[in-house]
Amino acid sequence: MQDLEIRKYPAYLLDHIKMTTISGVRETSAHKKKDSFWVVPTVGFLITIALTLLIYPNLPQDIIVYFKTFERYGGPVLPPYNIGQALIFFFSISGMWGLVAASLRYVFRHPVKKVVEDVMGSFFAFILSAYYAGTITGRKLILLFIVGLIAVIAINVIASVATSYAKKGRQGPIRS
Image (spheres, rainbow, N blue to C red):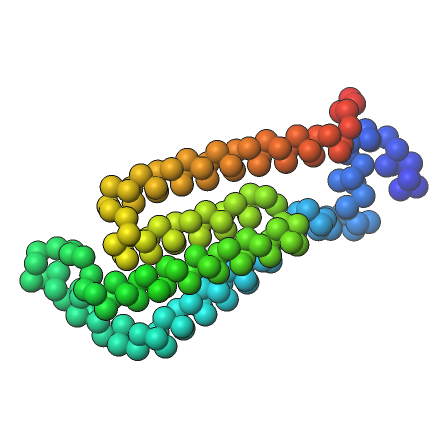
């Protein structure tokens, strides 16, 4: 009886109907699964924080002292050398971990959009590291951020269009 009910639907809806169980509860398809890859960047972030605190054990106290200087100077100032060194280390390690995460996403065939997000996260971490290291100026930092944001938006739009085009190609023509 269920076969007869399925036949009355157009071909492009059959995938949706097949994903529904007899009880009417929709099953999760492979492409609709929640992204469980969040564990990799989260673990990387926690490892990066742990490494930073191991290498710079006085960092929490230094940060507290730094925030107290806001009162003395009437607002934020550039952090002192020891905090700057910790920031350079943190952003460098974060950038490297982002590249590892992007590589793993690529190898395990995650959506291109997610790979790009990880790569661009690494890009931003590396330019912040370069800024604190004194390799680039504040103007270059702002310019690189703007270029990076434009690149993220452009690549995400291209990936979205390509993905939707590929999905339409797999479904075949829509019949009414």
